[in-house]
Amino acid sequence: MYDVIVAGLGGMGSAAAHHLSSRGARVLGLERFGPAHANGSSHGGSRIIRQSYFEDPAYVPLLLRAYELWEKLERDSGRDLLSMTGGVMVGPPLSKTVAGSLLSAQQWGLPHEMLDADEIRRRFPTLTPEPDEVALYEARAGFVRPEETVTAHLQLAAARADIHFEEPMVAFESTSDGVRVVTAKRTYEAGELVICPGAWAPDLLADLNVPFAIERQIQYWFDPAGGVAQFDHSHHPIYIWENAEGVQVYGFPAHDGPSGGAKVAFFRKGVLCTPDTIDRTVYQDEIDAMAAHMATRIPNLPGKFLRAATCMYTTTPDEHFVIARHPAHERVTVACGFSGHGFKFVPVVGEILADLALDGRTEHPIALFDPSRSFA
Ligand SMILES: Cc1cc2nc3c(=O)[nH]c(=O)nc-3n(C[C@H](O)[C@H](O)[C@H](O)COP(=O)(O)OP(=O)(O)OC[C@H]3O[C@@H](n4cnc5c(N)ncnc54)[C@H](O)[C@@H]3O)c2cc1C
Image 1: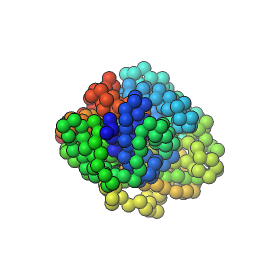
Image 2 (image 1 turned 120 degrees about the vertical axis):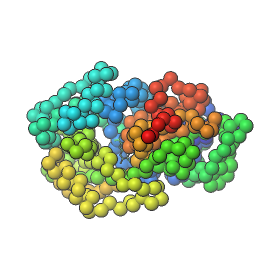
Image 3 (image 1 turned 90 degrees about the vertical axis):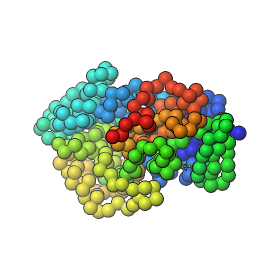
Image 4 (image 1 turned 180 degrees about the horizontal axis):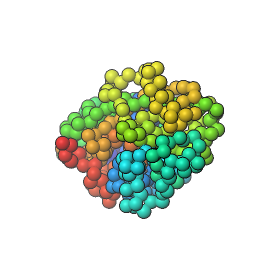
């Protein structure tokens, strides 16, 4: 009998398996696919990490703890996971991206600088903002490597835990002293169950009654005109750039050598799908639309299209996460609905899930993520 079963070993579940097993729990991890696969939400080489959080200042304490845990994970795994490149949040002064980031920075006393359009162009010659656009610059922003992170957590967890790939959970039920989990192969009993299903949340967690929307998203890689050197992180930061219509686009320095290109994506603009129906083909009109959107902002970026990859968001109506003890199952903890901005929190979510499963509570502020909140 296991102390805890973790179902879903993507970004969040692999972190939970590591934190649980490092606290001495006997853990079984179950994953539908193989390790660090590209069928869910945690692939594509890079994820933005930042602290001046426009989504809500309530995320900042979690980010401060996440940064500590990212550094610890790098040390413990011996892997290169985190690159601090600096980041700019660009847009009209009153845009959510700029004003929201500034609110978090001011509320939490986070180091930042405000740059006008001339200063943005001077400091970052790849970027050509409109005269009325400004940016919040944050030195403590950068990116993390999602596949390397999942691999790191899985390897650390596997030192103590049983990890089963290609073994999806098909059902679970509460028992008198824990949970019973049925997989495609057999049935297991455990004291606790932690479910981190990513885009499979609507199937596995329908009884949460959270109206999740699964969205197809696209990551694009371009070989910049003039080569990748000018897009190196010493010249080109991570950025989130909001236009006057509220459309947000974000991107990364080139970090995969001369042929890797630089990645860019729209933050939202997703098409509804399910994990079974998602169209993995990326079409020429989509590539053209991205190139056109960037042509005035980062003119050298859309030099030559290299490749694209689809990915899924699991979005809640308020775009805040769902992390809680399951309201209908005493021994079940859930983490889902990361709404396209969860990866930077991966290690702290692992810590929170271990707290909830082993202690029934956490010191971390997670009231915003209560599944019983109103979605009206
Ligand atoms: C294109 C894109 C860009 C993003 N950019 C950023 C960014 O810059 N910064 C940021 O912070 N966040 C970003 N995100 C969001 C972030 O990547 C996600 O919030 C995060 O990866 C979600 O992790 P997860 O563990 O919930 O999902 P996943 O990593 O998909 O893990 C869920 C796992 O559960 C498994 N599973 C499902 N059903 C079962 C079952 N029945 N039994 C066993 N296993 C099962 C799946 O196979 C999968 O491995 C981005 C997401 C995408 C798609």
